[in-house]
Structures are given as C-alpha cells and as structure tokens.
Length: 496
Image 1 (cartoon, rainbow, N blue to C red):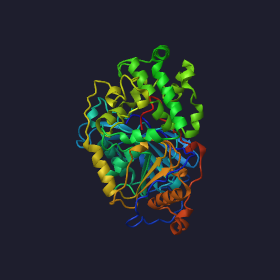
Image 2 (cartoon, rainbow, N blue to C red):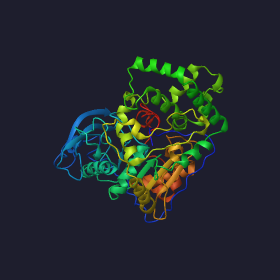
Image 3 (tube, rainbow, N blue to C red):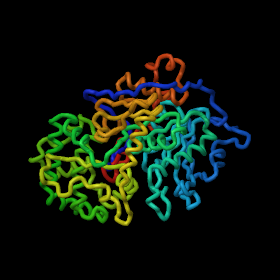
Image 4 (cartoon, rainbow, N blue to C red):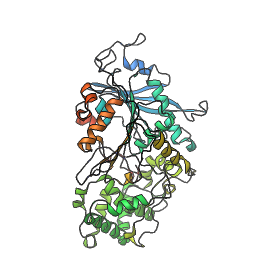
C-alpha cells in the first residue's frame, strides 16, 4: 500500500452498511470502580516513597530522558526520549533514541498507548479511546522515522516485530507507574501497528482499538480494490473524477511544463523516482484513490463537471488539491522512506487497474521500490501478513476494528474468525479514512464505546447494566480532540 492514513475523524452521509460484529465469547473484563484522584494526579504531589512528582518517577526509568514539558490545563504533557536496542534480538549491538510523548492525567486512570505508525506529534492531543476512558496517553514515534532512527541505519532492523518490541519495552517500563488497564490504538498504519503489537505481545494490552487498518494478506491479489472503485459513491461522481484524471494524462505535455516550472520554483528534484514524468504520472494515478480516502461524497461538487472543456489550470488545481504535486519529489518522499520500505518488504501495496485510462498510463501503479532510494536494499516477505491475518482470525481477544464505508483502504481489511473472542468489526456509514467510533450508527457507537470502557476497567455501573447508555467519560476538547484526516498528507496520498 502506499500512503494514506492520516487522521481519524470524519463521517458523512449516504446509505450505511454497518460492520459485522464478532461473537462475544469468554468473560468480559471486570469493570473497576472509579477511583479518586491519586497523589500522582496533575493537581497534587506526593506519590511513592521514592518520589513526589510524576516527572521524577518517569525520569527515574533507566534510559528515559526529558526533551521538554509543555503545560496543558488538566494534564501534564512530556516530550521524552527512550533508549532502545537497534536489534531486540541482540540488544548489545547498539542503541538509538526513540521519541515518546506522555499526556499524564492520573496514575489511577487507565492508559492508552497510541501510535500513528509514523512520526509522533510533540503537541498535546488525545486519541478517541483516550477521551472515551478519560485516561493517560503514551504516544510512540515509529522506529526509523527521524529523529528516531539509528545511525548508521541498518534497514533490515525495520520490521513489524522490532517495532512491536519497541512498544513492549516502553509498556513494560511505564506499567510500573501506570498500573491500571492499558489499551492500544492507532489509525491506518497506526491501526496496523496496534494489531502487530497485539499479535507479538498478546499479554500486554487489555484491549485494542484499530481504526481503518489495511490488511494486505496476498500482495499480488488486489481485485477487492478494483471492485471498490467500480461501485463507490455515485456514477456521476465517479465519472467526474475519471474525466479529470484522463485529461491530466491527455494533457501531459502542457501540464508537465507547468510541473517543471513548479518544481524549479520550489527546489524539487526527482532522483528517487527517476524522472519528473514518472512523478507526474504517479500523482495523477493517485487522484481517485486520494479523493475517496480524504473526501466525502458531498465533495464531488468541487470536481470539474466537464473535464474535456476545463482549462489546464482547472485540471492542475484539482489534481494538486487532492493528490499534491509535491508528493513524489525527493523532498516529499524523504520523510516517508520508512513507510515505503515496509510496504515493499512486509506490509504490501495495492496495484489497482484503472480501465478508464486506456493506454494513457506509461508506468501503471508504481511499486514501493520506486519510492525508496536504490542504496537501501529491499526484499518482500510474503508470509508476514498471512501470519498476522491468521492470528487475528483465530486468536483475536478484545480487539476492535473501525472502517469507513467509502474508504478504499477498507477494501482489504481485518476480519474475525471463529476463534475471536469479545472482538468486533464496525463500518461507519459514508465515512472516509477518518472513520471513528463517533461516526458509527447509534447502536454500534454505544456497543463500541461500552466495550472500550469495559476493557479499560472504567465502565460505570449504568453502562455495565445497559451498554446502550455508554458515552465518553471526558468532555470534548477542541484543541486536544480535533483530528485532521489529512494530518500525514504532505508527501503523497497513497499511504495508510
């Protein structure tokens, strides 16, 4: 797969297909009564016998260091570094510093372990599960995303097991302080990351909430994506998008002239992909995917209705607004080299057919190898995703997946098998790649929220008696809770 997450927050209109739920087997996690604010809360000092302040307790962890503390009302927010082995199988062979942030509320509250699968934001924010359980949040930067990259970089140590082991070490260190229930969460590549963590360390977390997580089990079989694009939205909308994409390739010469001027003005180069022409086509071929990933059906009104008679500038503007002409320049790709490396070695990537283009495409959907410098060796490992998929089907326990009805990445998704217990798959009607629990239909929203509260051990008595009464325990905070579905968009649209 190539690009795409980002965010988590959307919804929309349209006829909704509600996701199937997994069977609820096995004992539910017993809810713990709400406790009073502890001496390690944001309002007080005192803690254990050895330390009186939460910062002191955190920094007493071997290998943990403080970058900065930022104030936020009701919380304490720390930006930290933690020393990790480059290779968890051989911890004596070098270390690197990995960035972590900690939104601290109270050690008496549950903790949510969040990762986007990319860089970590150094500004305070809450994932949806953190708001639901009114808890603490630990956020981890994915290994090899700078500055959390070993030097020199041995790229063979960038794999899903090593990354899961990073999370395991962080959890093990912080669990001594935050000893209540823990959930792990993330969106898109972050949802994949949460799943892989659970697969390799199933005893660490008390629940998993994975949003819009792709699951490319067989890398060479992508017909599910083709079916999606034949049916998504309305024919009128699909025809408009197809028309703009075709015109962008028909008018390749004048628009590439504009692209050359644009690249020169911004200092963009194309050494990794090999040429401006290949980068141009990659952006154009991403156009329809990127629209459905980030936009809603209502946004079709912004697409030129008669592409054949639209000006060159109108075609350029539409492609740039949705795909982004900086996407496949070296400067746009550099941040995301670790993602493309993983897509080409373990995660897989889509190769969709776009028959409406006829013979206008010169390169087709370009594989991840195109977007990684040739100095970095890559070899695809087809068994890795099959292993994860098989494990989820047969061993999922307290795992939740939330998808958007109109999100292309949900075409190949995680599905539950007969071995799953207390696990669920939901679909948000009309939603894109920002689908979340809040966007589910009311019955599924309540069921999902109740499960998250239960797994975190903070379900109120009224919710234990009647799950339909479930609501987030923390009130909405516009600064902490607002998520932009395009938050990772710089550098290209086809990345989860």
